[in-house]
Every structure is written in C-alpha cells, then in structure tokens.
Length: 75
Image (cartoon, rainbow, N blue to C red; front, side, top):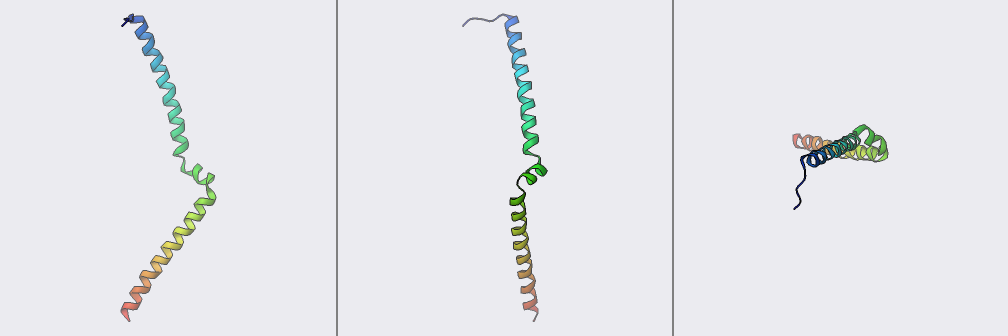
C-alpha cells in the first residue's frame, strides 16, 4: 500500500471538509423545504380542505353520538 505524504493527507482532509460543507448546506435547504408546513398546505390546499372536512364530520358525529347516548340514559 503506497503511503501518502503529509501534504497529500492534508489536501485530502481539506477536500473532504469542503465537500461535507456543501453537502450540509444542501441538506439544510432540503430540510427547510420539507418542514415548511405552510408551503405544504398551500401546495396541497385541496387535499388539506378535504381532510379537515372529513375530520370535522367524524369528530362532530362522534360528539353527537356521545351526547345523544348520555341523553338517552338519563330518561
């Protein structure tokens, strides 16, 4: 195995450090896009509205069933 000189090793470390810095910046940008929930809602507005309507319907129906059951037991 050929040995590398200290200059070559330092050069390799610096190249790896620069590549790591670029990768980290790219990752930060991707994380910012993925975690932007307002942007995701804007992008998928129709789906979000449908989901909210379904959740409201289910929650409202569940609450109505609970209160109707309590009302029936009192009588």
